[in-house]
Image 1: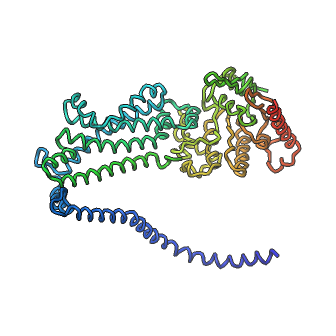
Image 2: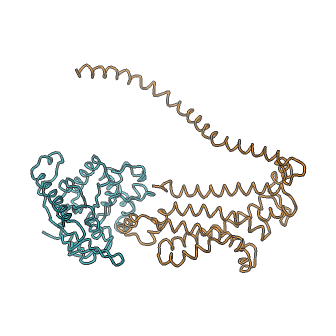
Length: 298
Length: 264
């Protein structure tokens, strides 16, 4: 019974193998164009819906604000009023009469400095609080109270302490963004599995090696959550702080535009602030992905 | 009989607030060099605690562990552990996980190139050299445990401690890995102490089986010599009378002792 069955299989198998090279040639080209098509489709799926929504919102905005006596300008007027600022962001007429690029770059520099300081201090304090029970008992209640203080409430105090706008703004960014970094780092350190500590103990890593090779990589997903919240908060704080301290910066640009009743310029500035906040957030998220190498969850 | 690893009157008492629990009571055991010893007992009998004490990850309340006549009470690479859940670091590749220990243990005695070769040698021993650049999340459970074994072996431990190394694996993978460990033991002649709750595994792999009574206050109830010649073959042993007798003996111990404690 079995014999004829196997024979048939062998017979059908031989033509299939001879035909194989011919078959193998075609699929090689097919997947590539298919892959492009799939990529195009995926991009379209992501890009088209937000574009449609934006177009609709613009249309509503235009219709609502077009009427005579409307308090806010419609998008067409915004574009017309701010065309110069959009086209040439690099002009510099001295003082605070500069292109938007200079305002944004001044704000970004303050954020970069304040945020870097808070990242370093935040991670260090987070490690301390996460690692030592006594540090946690002593410091955690303090952190929980201090972190609820709104950013701008710090500003008068820091102006009194530093007697200058620039360091005060940086301090406000620092003090605003440090809390989520500390708290998330501490949680990450506390959640390092006992297994990893055991491995480190058996291998006899010294405290420094343990910090670099186990602690930081194990807590990295948590640390980057804190860093991401922190960068968002510092961008929130800078605009508010700059409104009060004056000088070059996007916050003061907005305040200045309001004082000169240039509502269109405010709208343009808000657009830039939103875009840059989004880019900063993505930047930290991307950095986190690279550093944790996508092993965050496992 | 020369004592290589000696457990000397080990007691372990856990204290939580006012409540104290005596987990281990008066554990005495000597293990010869090159022996494969299994510790078997019901879950909760403190066998993992005992292994942690030997590894130095927990300290004994009284008594101590002697390795080559010297007391050990902190963890170290001379008593490398293969953990039940492999405990590979997920952000390192297979190679880097093994290299971590090698770099520490042989920092002074081996050059960079030698350490690299030694890592690869150990990955080859467990047939994992092909996955050197993979991360733990990209390989199967059995493969992870192989890497865990390679990491422990690469530290050239005096005693290899296996903490239920095959517990989390499916039956087929477990059998395959048991054969690998047997072959490694045959080839390298390591002294191995294994925690297990699998009777067949204990009889198949061990020279001696240490049977522990139920906790609290678990102690060594009986030590059984397994006089089976090596290399052992799983299929041949299935009908071997010595094997069956040993198996019977362990089953009887666990079964009767378990019942006795419940009645008490």
